[in-house]
Each structure stands twice: as C-alpha cells, then as structure tokens.
Length: 412
Image (cartoon, rainbow, N blue to C red; front, side, top):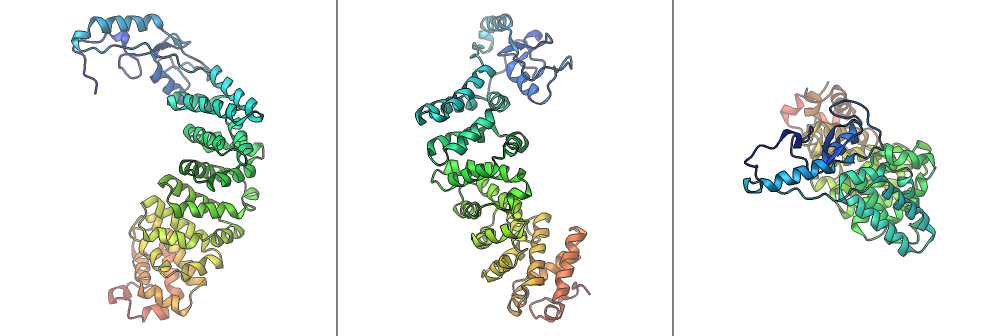
C-alpha cells in the first residue's frame, strides 16, 4: 500500500472523481480536468461531464493536460522527503485510430498468410490486455467484433492458432449478448459461428475450449427458435463433454446454460439425451456442485425429463431419482422447485412399481411431504409437491419407509 504523504496535496491537483492526486490529468471539451483513469471509467457508463453534467461525445478523446502534469511532478519532487511519491510520465494511451487500423489489418490479412494474420491478431490482443479502457475501446470500434467473428468462422477449419487468438480477444472484451451478437444475427452468421465453436470445442486447448463455451452460451441465448431447433447433434455432444471434463467452473456453467436454453423443444431434448447428458448431470449432482451449478443442472434435468427418453435415462441411473431428491431442501428455493418439477415428471410419466418403491425408500416421498407443508417455498412449488404425492398416495401412505410424523403431513 502507498504511504500517505505528510503534506497536504493542493486541491487543484486532486481528481474531482476520486479526490486523489492525478497521475495523468486530461481535460474534457467542457474545460474540466480529471485523472484519465477516473474519467474514462465514468464516460463508459455515464457519457456526461461529472461536474457540468454536459454530454460528452462517445468518440471523445480527452486532451492531456501536460502543464498540470508537470506541475504535479515538480511538486512531488519538491516534497519527496515528506513521503510524496514521484508521478511518472504516463505512456501515451491507445487511441481509436490505432485500434481501427489494427482491425483493418486483420480484415485485409484474412486472405493472406496465417503468419501475417496472427501478427495482427496478437497486436490487437496485446492492446486489449493493457487495460479495461482499451478493451472497451476495441469493442466500440465499428466492425471490430464483426471482423473478429468473420475471421474465426473462416479460419475454424484451417488454422487452430488463429481461432485461439480470436477467442482470447473476444473473451477478454466481455461483450454483452446484445453488443456481440445482434450483429451476428443480423448477418445470419449464427449457425456458421456455432459450427466454428463446435470445432474449437473439439480441440485439446483447454483455454480455447473454455472461451468457446462462454461464446456458445451467448450465441444460443440470442438465436431465434427457428435457428435453435435444427442445432446439430455435435453441439450437445461437445457441451456434455465439457461438463464431463470439468474444464473450468465458468465453462461448466456455460455448458449448463446452453443445455437449459436449447432444450425447450423435443428434438433438441432427444439430441441432448442421446449425447449422454442425463447420467453426466446426475453424476454432477452426486459430486456436490456449488449452488448455481446445482440449480442449472436441475434445470437442465427438468427440461430433459420433458421427453420420454430423458425420463427413462434418469430412472435407469442407479442414483438418478435419489440424487434429484437429495438436492431438494438442501441447496436453495430455486433448486427445490426444479427438483420437485423433475420428480413430478417421473411420478407422472415413468412411475413403474420399482420406481414408486425407490422414491419411498430413498426418502424422496418424505422430502415431498416437507415441501408440500413448508411455507418457505412458493405456492406453485408446494402445489407441485402435493400433486406428485397424490399420484401414488395409496402406495406411499402405507409404505413402511414413510415415518409416522411424515404420514401426518401427507396431503389429503
């Protein structure tokens, strides 16, 4: 930590935003001077001068106040003995023109040798890695994202190195779904991008697989229903493999989001089930995932149990029903609701005599009794639990596995 100076800093050396001494003073068109880091962060969200409230153009580059910076540096040198640290001359910031030039080079080198394209991509990657300001700048340059996506799609079948660089750049930008993919959808590149992401997921580069998983989550989140229904089977195979391989927590959550978001429709549910998703999700629940991952896994199982193939896979798993029932009451209200929905699907459509007995023996029926009576959960969740219990009331109410105090809670 920096030591506090033993002398009072002149008020005109302080940034109006942070109230700390400015290191790189810059002046807005409104005439007010701020520290570069503070005002650039402010302008990313507000778009106005903090003091005057006047609007500042989005493409405004604040003017360096060299005179004030030299005064600050001289004052720091004069009071070095009092604990004032020297203010270094700042490195000239990357401007919009340089980023636009790099984007143009990348687009122009798309048909050139991979080495030239890689050199341009690595330079842009270095620029983006310098600061949050630079990442926002790259994202804001017209056609920068479009160009990167186009390079990624084109190079997916020819150059893994190029794809890895593009994925690293896009992931560092942390673009919103709207910012990143509205353009992709407008240019009808969504399915081509999905195919390219599947190719990236099939490679061995762990970092690129994680980046591709996050991008796939964002892509599928904004695709239309007509585009999601014909998703290739390879998408679900690679998503399930991501969960199985435990590449990273972020990649696992992204894969779960993809499963939840792409399986409201029967065809995709069957594809996901055929890819082996149900046993992988059950095994994940048995491993005790963190709360959000558990909620997503149960949400995915809820989707998959909407088809006969998914329910058959769940009840065929030696611990499937028990694993779902065990997460109710123990994780969160959301997890309990999802677990109850899964159990209701099983009890309604896949309840053989063996399954009904298993639900009693593994404590699932007792859990449903608690949920049905507890005011902690929403009325819809409680009603689903009561509905499930009524489906096989004759078998469950007389079961020796149901404790006496739970029998008293059994719905009429």
